[in-house]
Image (cartoon, rainbow, N blue to C red; front, side):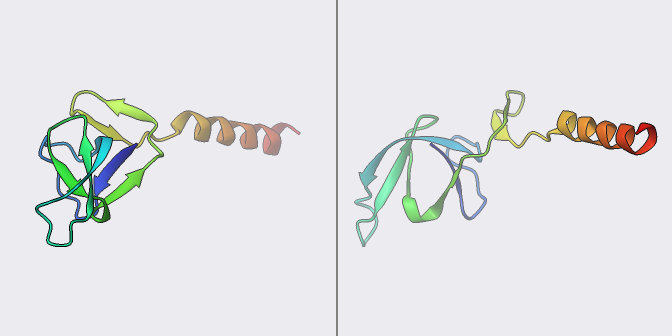
Length: 89
């Protein structure tokens, strides 16, 4: 599962998106809340400070973060189909 921080700040690894590997009890938290551990670094963050992201389409290796891909090909295909229907049918 991939998560981001609700605050928008990067994780300890410097990335804005991290992959969850497990859950632990955060003993540094006075309320002893559950926290996620991550594949990218050895940190843990409380679950209530994270938000799950499931709609990733591509991986941008130049910056090392998951980014949203724009479905440009689909939009162009729909546009050309509509153009063809309007002008030739």
